[in-house]
Image 1 (cartoon, rainbow over the protein chains, first blue to last red):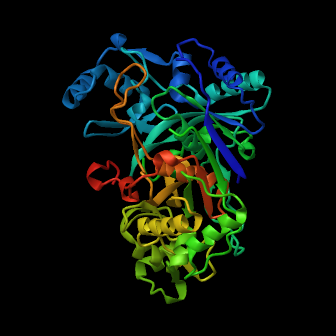
Image 2: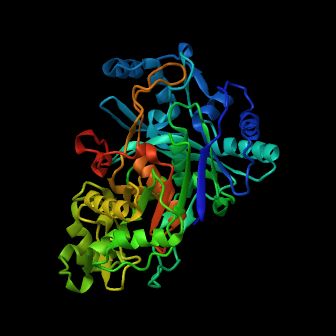
Image 3: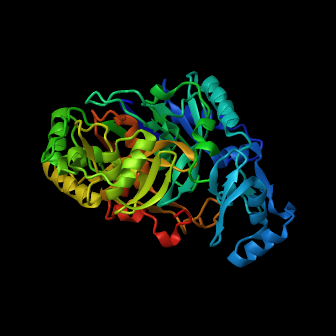
Length: 250
Length: 250
């Protein structure tokens, strides 16, 4: 485990627009902050700004609404155009009850509304999830490492609800330069018994820690976790997606 | 959100035994560490040491094994006595497949093995979850506040797996002096649109952040999160347990 972590937001990132160079915007904000990047830093970047920079937006005026989306939207007081985008982003609907849609995305994420979100987006648009969040993270890592002169790791994060527990938490959609899982299996506890089953989703815990300093209004969409060199490494956020063959809750 | 968080483990806590004064043990370790407690600190304490201090242990030699526990244990290469303790700690089994038991505890937590755990426990024993994790947290808060001279908040944490995602993360079983949920509903995003649905499980995110500095071998079962005054307040970990009436995954 890390000896000590510092978690802080990167101030001064202006509103991100489609086509913006997000790596440059984050890197410049860090340089302006007067707080040099350190070895072992992990940057946690909100999905929302990644989607906006990549143009992963849908203009609602362009959406052709299906009959099901129309009925569901009318029945539950929601914009049928947004429901249609949710259906198009889903590869499978896991639950569709009480006005709530829990969907499995093309990436394998299971989340509300297939990650489609209207908050912190210009009126008339919604964001969808980045096409390949690991590639997004890799581009940001390359840009930030070049601008800041230190090898950094990057997590692209989003806020997901959970079954059985109230409240959402931040999780990692994609990672670059980071080993997302820490595997303690085979290590001994202090009675010398080998730990049997403990694999920790470090990338999700880092994403959750970052949420505590960024909040939900998106004025500060990027946080740094300092002291996390232990988890720098190679890995993909795909390792965080449980395969259907081992999932008891599909 | 917080401006900046520091997350660090409390060193020097000796192995906890039944009947130990855990608040005193943690408080003394903090005083010995030479790092004074600050206003706004949140202490995250692993369930394992809380259970041990409270005597929430079961001696396997005393367990009367039912026929189902015997069959399940034999079928899956597990100790039937531990399976029996799992059944006794459950109020409902949510899944019992492929050698895995996901159970709902008397508290309403849904987790593997109803929280019964043999790691970091003397041979021949297992721990069960504290009877009332919020009361456990409140006792620790009172003890630590008295010993350290600062009002602190306390989270009793455990490591839970999740549907759909690989790896476990730390969550809060009980809290004291802390508002476990942050409700952003009704706040405006930066387009002036009201955020509709975002309630964040801050206590779970704090527990996850703490796991990053404590690890799983239980030599450092307590972490401090400094800078978390924003979430000090009144609340119960019961707010984190989704009620069956609003849960799509029971």
